[in-house]
Length: 249
Image 1 (tube, rainbow, N blue to C red):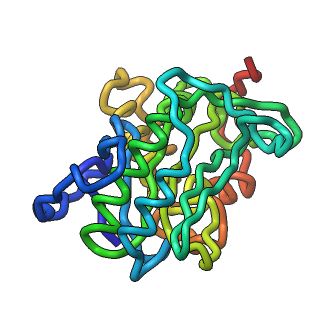
Image 2 (cartoon, helix red, strand yellow; image 1 turned 120 degrees about the horizontal axis):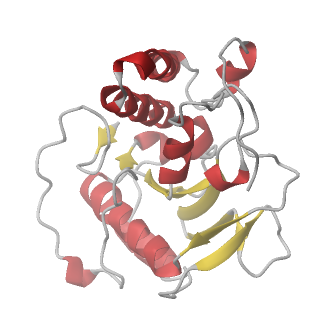
């Protein structure tokens, strides 16, 4: 498991990667996730991946500089999440994530060129350097903001539709990969860190609620069954936290 320099956790970044000749890649050039979004390389998502396959898969992604509203779980829509492009042994998947209501008609605005650029980042960081897969989050800020509202009950599932975010994953075409935005423990760790930042900024009278949430998410990150349960499954087990739920907007 490798945390790239764009990770949001209080961990030491990996040593500098070898210089890459980016001009050999198809456009767009790799783009680092903008914090609080982050990327991770992990062999769980694939190993022995070939750079040529990854390059050809990226070439199949849509282009476009303007944001597009991708509908979620609407297969007949022109722009729909999730979707996957493939070439030989490499697959690139873009998937919605979060505990949103499955029956709701939701959308998320994403720029196709940014999706391509993040895939290029994963190709250079993970595939070119290590031959393994990985993923990047996209628009996770809305979720991190929601769980750090003081009056929100984080255990009230599902969350409002505006908390939906996306992940871009590059990995093996023939390996089952559950959506990392739902099943990867690093998402719970990112939520714990967000609560820690909120705790540090809160007045003394309000610190306790953020500290308790931070503890819950940190414990979840450390103990959840990797890729078998979602990061929010544990929230259903208890409803003792006080707070009100913000309605879908």
